[in-house]
Image (tube, rainbow, N blue to C red; front, side):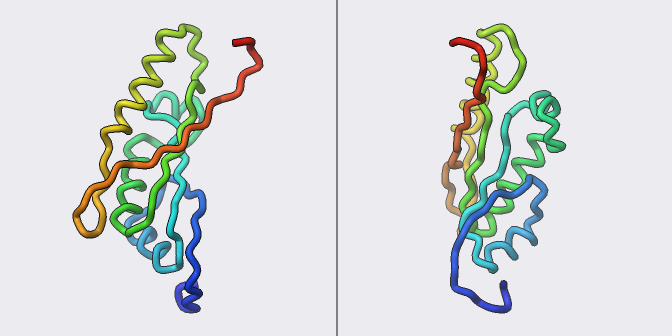
Length: 128
């Protein structure tokens, strides 16, 4: 795709194992947007989801895409954990929102931008 110089921009979902070199290649190939399934802020939740990644790996991939000039959308699952206590579940949600609302991406030119977040709520069979 890089050699063909298609002049097309697009986006897709990526796993959180993206090196800076791969992010730069994706940008040259026309990737303008990268959706990363961060899913959760807590490593324990990622383990429960069988994601095979850590929050540090997610942050590294997000940073690599930002430095390569690719827009990043971090996708999160809210309310995944099997936590029975409503208060604890709310604390997890608040912690995730708090962390990512403060997260700033450093662009190639050194400027900073907030991280875009896409929320997905876990559907439940329970009456709410």
